[in-house]
Amino acid sequence: MKKETNQLTKSEGIKIANISDKYSCLPANSPRATSLMREEKNQKILGCIMDLGKLPKIDMQDPKAVQKRIWEYYEFCHKNSLPLEINTFAVALGITRGAIDRYISGKINAHSTAPLLAEAKQMIEAHTESALDQDAINMAYGIFKSKALFGYQENSTITVENKNSINPKKTEEELRQEFVDNLEPADYEVEDVK
Image (cartoon, rainbow, N blue to C red; front, side, top):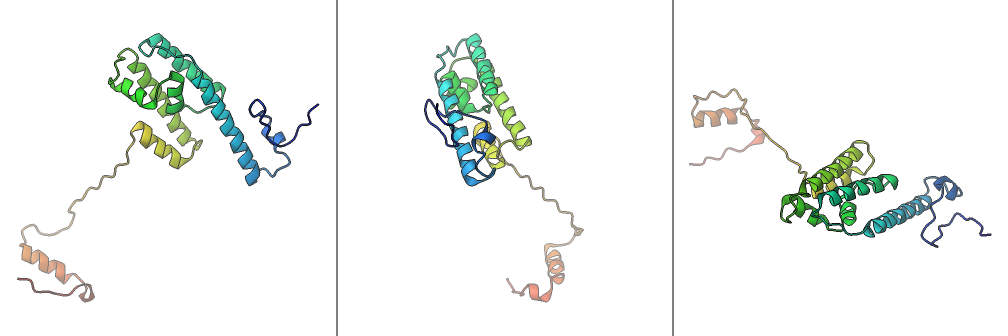
């Protein structure tokens, strides 16, 4: 009989046990425990991606096949606690992330499936927003992801209004003199420019 240890084993992939039992000999937030749990999680994600890549190819022109695969992808992610991601979605479809955008934009002729892919991409975007709202993903990563994959942009609008009580009937020279008169002597040097 094989004795259970608190080390990772790599026969037939990593066996995921109860994390609290598996690393009970390590302090809960120790760098070693964190590193081991991160490695284990990465192995699980890699296994999920490999499983998605093994799915049989579908006809991307067939709306029923595409819709079925979309729901299979959602269910797979839910069952495996895998976040909805554009890249894993593309793997499940057997195409690239760029191809998804080309289908949606009509650059690849698939008029009957483009709306399905656009809706699925919207679901993935909504999942990202929800994860950001709930602090379930790193804020910087979420912002980067939203900009890179969903076209989000940061825009600043600056409105400048003249709310000064300057008399519009004054000449330019009178306005300049009024400005200069209101400055402290140390703030400027007068230079005669003519």
